[in-house]
Length: 221
Image (tube, rainbow, N blue to C red; front, side, top):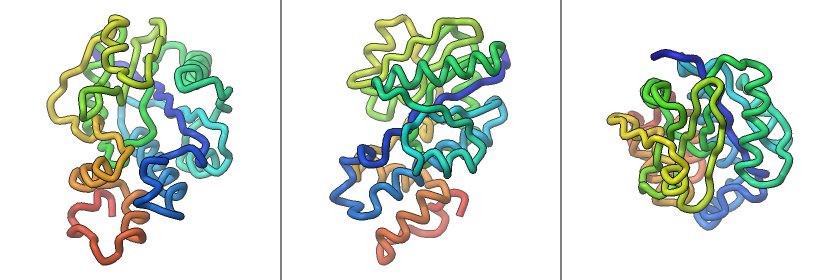
């Protein structure tokens, strides 16, 4: 089954973003957060099944660059992550009621459009479904088919929460970049091995100019 998707991507205020990377990134932390979100949005917009990307944020410093990439930006009501996602989903349904609606984490700097397409193709077969993160604890994608109730359960051990809520876990081979969110330096190193998008790659080069991996590591460079 093939359907079009509206993807909702929540972006925190930059002062609260990527705090576990603060020691490693210093004054570049907020720049890295914008870069990671930019690569996530750009990859999603390049994915053929994705009709639109809706960014939910309260931070104009993030809203501007992401809108410039082609995302629709709606204000975050600042009542938690799942409320932000439901706000974006409501906008998506108004704009395109016949499309599937998905929530995608904003911290997927190695995201590849082809791998996201595989996940969305699998998601189209179920009323609600999700992709677990690389640690099998959290969630990087949650989606529903057109007309189904959008009930995200992000936060903490969200894999277990989505399973308990009846969502189908998508065990799709070959979607490592969809599962690799970045919260810690170890996560970032793992994303580097997969291949970073160009925005994140540029920041990482500035952060570690004398310890740059080979050029073929940098996706999109």
